[in-house]
Image (tube, rainbow, N blue to C red):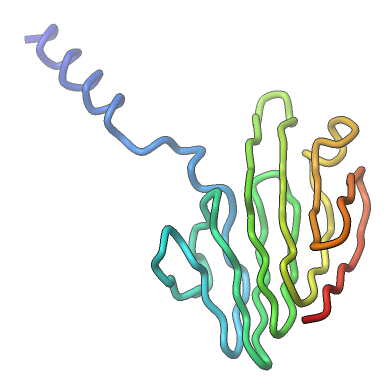
Amino acid sequence: MKCALLVTFSLLAMTAQPAWADIGRVKKSAGIASIERKGARVNPAVGTALLPGDVLVTGKGGQIAVSFADNTRFSVGPNSRIAVDKFDFDRTTRSGTFETRVERGSLGVVSGQIAKSRRDAMKVRTPTSLLGVRGTRFIINVPE
C-alpha cells in the first residue's frame, strides 16, 4: 500500500506544472490592455500570472503594472508592446537571466535581484539598442 501511494505521488509530481512557470503577477491594469500568450489574448486582471514568452500590450490610455518573482517591477505605458522573452530565476541563489524586448511604447523598470546578481543578467532590447541592466531604475520610450 505504501509503495502504491509513493508511486502515485511521484507520478503526480512529475506531471504537475512546475511552480517556477509563474514568473510574476499583474498588480494593476487600466484601459485597453491585454497579454498575448501563444496566440491567445489574456485579460490582465489583478493577480493574473505571467509566463515566459508573454507579451504585454496596451492601447490608447492603457497601462499594466507587473511585479516579477525576483522583485523587478514593470510599469507599461499607453500604446506599448513589451515582450518578456526570457525569465529564469533561482530563488535559492537569487540569480538568473531576464530578457525583455520593447517593440514600441514606454516601459518603466525598477530592477530586482536578477539584475543585481551579475553583469548582463538582465537585458532590455529595443529596435535600435541593447541595454545591460545592473540594479537600477530607468524608463525606456520607443516611438511608433
